[in-house]
Length: 246
Image (tube, rainbow, N blue to C red; front, side, top):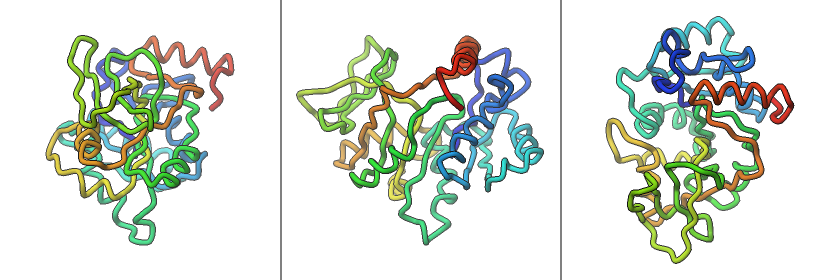
């Protein structure tokens, strides 16, 4: 699933007349770049949540024959955040009973990386996790907290705020989330939150209840949030200088 419903306010004025999914980086839309990355790892079926200029996304996909993939669209009349968006689109992952146990990838449209999805899935399956979150040791105002076994234990929502701890541990390491997750379909019926909610809220509740939500250390991979025009400029430069291969 590609999360693409947000307003892209940090990308203004680029998003004044288009959704952030259709903002371009080095001549390609963020949506095309993300779909190409998924396709390179063998993914052929994708659902995209849309809200801001939703019709433009639908028209774009149609004009490009869905880039040779099966692409479904989940329209959100109001923004449901990451958890609400996934819950609304849950039918997509539960419709095929043959592959009902296969994990799926959740990916923000406004991030670019070289993170190895195949390796993430292998780790996820080998450890039989409920969710695997790609994280890095880098500066961020919002950090997730993990113990020495990489299990999710809490979060720090701001530098000056008290951390929220759901699994006490003597050793808690703050790590920044990348917006890339591998999720087991078993999680979907566990999303008991309703309406507008963050998937991280669900992860914390479930981790606090003993479910296995763990980190995948992605420190050695390129990653960039494309939330601001300056980030797009830097990513374009990185592509030009072959810092990142796409």
